[in-house]
Length: 491
Image (cartoon, rainbow, N blue to C red; front, side):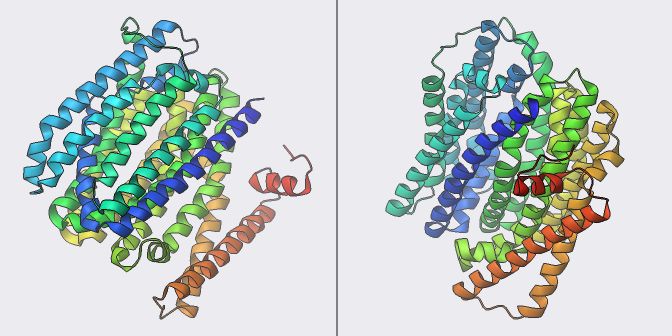
């Protein structure tokens, strides 16, 4: 029953994420055609301020609502009140920091953008907390619908402003409009009204405080690259950094977020059944990484073609960024499954500790990277940080859930080896057949299609060959063959 709920919920969220991210990607493509890398850099600085300010007072009460075994009206009211107060505080912090940030980066445009974006956290705080009841019941249809509709509104605004004015305001205004749409939909789809209440504050604070502190660590790690690149390499390079990483972030939104949402709810529901929890986690890691690995590695291998086709020659530096950020995302997504399990089990304090370790390692590495290697140095530091974060999460899961590192590595072994074989074949084919690549659009498209097809075939064949060598054990390969032959998979 639980497996069916996970698959059903993931299917709804995946469908919604694919469509909404297609629109999100379309928004980026439209904006990139009308705007310059410098414009994206200015907006990236402003969004970095929002990220830091939001993390400082972060209390993920929505997660706490889902994790509660039973939730009463006072819990939903308290959650809504905390979110609203947090939104107002974040808006205030952003408004206060707008002028100093503009001075530090010597960029007057940042001031107005930050002030405008300060309305966004207030909108997020107004979102109806009763909407989380759908997640508690593992009914993800309405979340998928909400995400899709908000992306439609955002895309239409980006398209209209970009075409009519070619102004960088297309980016912040579309974000604000999407926030307003999400608030309206949360009340339309879940019409029960929350009230102002703080009676259950201790319950939420006790669970959420460590998650909130962890989000501060995440925000520092994520924005440190943005601020350092913007300060020392300029807003144009920062714009390429921002756009390149956005393509990588699409992998997280499509491949990880739907699975994380459903698995967190599933882990929370079976948190008292240790054996079942371990089995569910290992199956999720094995199945999830079978799709995560080829998508992330493949996007990294074809990064130059992807950017050239999607954005044109003025964004070539973004191709370099994507070449590093996409493979790094594989480590983050894999580690994220472990973080989801730790959160479901209530080990938020432990999770915070390893995030602090990760940040303490990341900051000096990225400073050294920017100083000695410029953009490439910063990107290399980000990849190394992602790998360290994965190792730390794997160790923590072995400690709190009794799932050894050996078991976790075994779950991803075939996918990892198959992805490495795929990378070797694609790189070799590029050197042999495309040693002197033509930059013409049609040639670039044909090269991308040829290499992606070769990579897909290589990965699939390698995966099944490794499965055969392993003795045809239960796994994603058996499930795939069962689906094709319409026979029940072997357990």
